[in-house]
Length: 110
Length: 115
Image 1 (tube, rainbow over the protein chains, first blue to last red):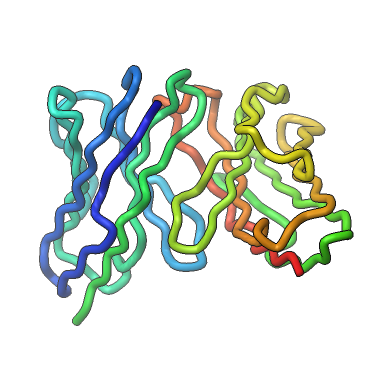
Image 2 (cartoon, chains in turn yellow, brown):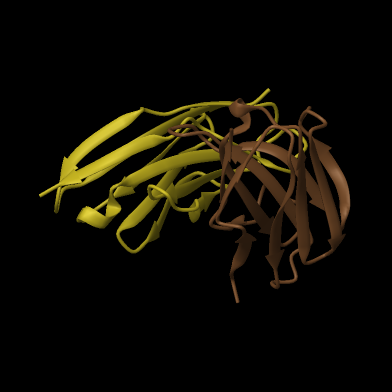
């Protein structure tokens, strides 16, 4: 089956850089996604990596190493509004639905 | 329009009630999903509809009954629920059923409380 590991909590201050790691064990691999969820809100898509390397989208970047079964989400120039839960996710074995990691709660303080 | 809408936003029901949750999208997506999310936990997949056919049922108890009347609508019928079923119920859609590459768009959820 599919399983993912990510830290449960990360704290940082405004303006800082934070990295949220995710390791996965999968039967078959299609790609690693990242979703953000604010308290009381819906998960929203942040990024997707199918190939090794870094994908950059504004202040957020995501990295994947398929040989290490590892990825990370990098958040730069942190803002208070970045306080949220961040989930890494991989498709199930059939590639028909997402399996989410347990989530990392990021708290940004001033 | 990249919006998935869900109604109602909040629902309180007794264990003998029958109620329905509704989800709608007008993005032309052909895959729709129901997830259950408890506080401080990840979304947990319940059902997947692909091209209006139920393709995945993650061993969900029969007191939850999904229905996909057409490609834009998804319902979740609830009957004889238990207090432990209280959770946020999220609907999502994606362009096709290919979770490997498709972005999933989530609705705001229905916060369900079972008394």
